[in-house]
Structure formats: structure tokens, C-alpha cells
Image 1 (cartoon, rainbow, N blue to C red):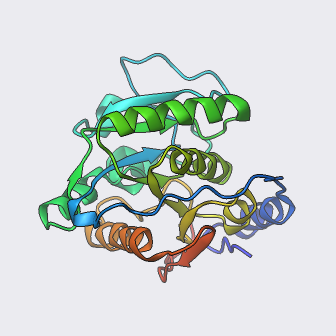
Image 2: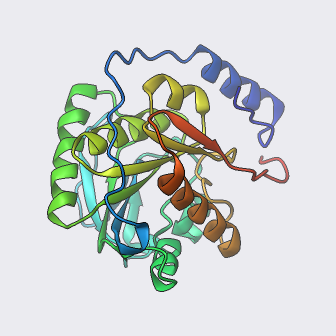
Length: 249
């Protein structure tokens, strides 16, 4: 069972109860797209379910299945955080805690990835329109394939958007794109049947650690890339060894 010891006791207990009681019926087999080429020769992209948009883009409707396309070169100051069922304070200081574009650029510079798409996609994490999400995620997959993307890193921001992230990953796999999904609640990922996952036991809105923890961010992103390369069948979730220090207020 996922633990939440980095939150005060009452809040941790509420999250543990939510996770234990979570239920999702997934009647379909897990879609699976093997990597076509080595990652060092593959173009990758990033998808987040953090509900981000450019301040010049219109707001998400509550429960929306829409996604926004955002340049990988804009800063947090250019963004609005529409889905705030998580604490965005760290991401406002360092976007890489939930959208690790700079760390993926680092892997490209080191020759470990073939390239990074110039834009990333953001979904609204608390999506209640699941039929619409499937259509929207399929459209996202078609767009990414047109860009020549072969693999996608999918990152959630809070507990509920673990579901959205896993569903998006499934549809991208169905569209012929390999994915790896960061997972912060195992119970969700297993029931939705995420194709490939890597479990990070960190607080919501801090999937890759605290602001400015560049070395930690690099390590986690490298581990996600390793999961993408090495997980050899649908439904596997790699447990990452990181532990959060301290208790949040």
C-alpha cells in the first residue's frame, strides 16, 4: 500500500483511505508498444496531467478532457495552474518538479535521448469525462506521431490524476507510442493497468522532488528512461528507491 508519511498524520490517513478504497474497472487488455529504436536515437516528448496552460490560453473547464500544447522553453511565470488540487508552490519556483523538461534536455545533451519535442502536452488531471479523454488522448497521440515522437514520459501531479495519466499512457500506446508513466499511487496505476510505470513515493506537486534539486531530478528522469528501456511486458511498475525527508505542513 502506498504510504504518505511525508504529510501530517490526519492528512496521511485520508490519502491512505482514499487509496485503499479506490476502485476502477478496466476490462480492456493493456496496450503495448515496444520501443522501435534505442532511446539515444529516439525523439521523446513529455505529457503532464498538472492542468497547466499558457496564461494566453483559455482556462480548462472543470473535469475537462482537453489538453494544451505548451512550448518546452517557457518558464513557470508564463503558465497558469488551473488544476490546483495539489500544492503548486514548488512548481512555481522550479517547473521541473512536475514538468522535467530541463532534465530531459540534459539527457539529450548527453546523448542518452535522440531529441526532445519542442512542445509538451498538459491534460487536466481531475478528468471526469473518460470517454472524452480517450478521444482527446488519441488526438494527442496522432499529433505526437506527426512530430516524429517515438516515446513519451507521462507525469501526474496529484492522487486523482494518476488515473488520468495512466489512461492517457494507455491511449498513446494504442496509437503506437511507447510510454513510461511516473506513478505516485500504486493502487491507481495497477487498477487502471498502466502499460509501464515507475513508482516515486513523493508528495503531490513534487513528483521530482523540491525546487532546485537538480541532481535528484536528473536521477529520477534517468530512472524513468531506464524503465522505458527495460520493462519488458505490460503492467510492470518499477519501484524507485527515493525517500522523502521531513513532513510537509
